[in-house]
Length: 262
Image 1 (cartoon, rainbow, N blue to C red):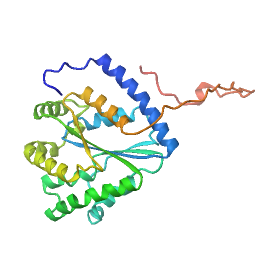
Image 2 (image 1 turned 60 degrees about the vertical axis):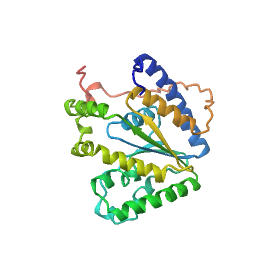
Image 3 (image 1 turned 135 degrees about the vertical axis):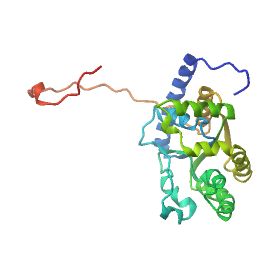
Image 4 (image 1 turned 180 degrees about the vertical axis):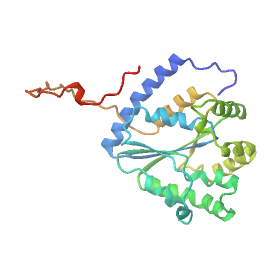
């Protein structure tokens, strides 16, 4: 967010989001029609707004077409596999959009900083990741990568809100505390990651996340701009009349209803 920039009006935000949602539906229909394979990687600082953008993208879309992948801690078996093997089953097939809420870049971030991988594993990742992504692109996958940045002041504010708000407490973990203590280490790890993986074939796009509303609109707008699609021309449909016949429905007491509490 540009310093001293006025906060985006909520009404304007909602109007613009509605327009983008309509375009996302058109994009979805185009992906299905043309059999496109779209993979979007969301990475960045904790509390930088990745989840909010993902939620706004998926909100108007068919979950059978647009899927979110947010993997947990790898199993003991997965730890012995080729590193990228864990993510391959979740890559999109024709007519699918897959949003990775964190991805194989865990190795370049949290695993490196927190010591969850060896130096050899980390260095091999930096060497092999660009090749892996080139393979995906050559296979026909449209790969888009977003990095969400946030200032330490705004991250602290959002962490405090997560701690005190029961509806957001699940978002906060002990790992968040440790990651905040290692702010500088994460910054260094991100810079090295960009040096190796911000390639011409598969560039990173940075989203400034201090202003959540603007970040959501800007990211969705950019995402739409990265894929050539055409608005769907829907056929006119007339609803057929209901044939009620002579069926006699059972009495109300025959079924169990949810109480009208509200």
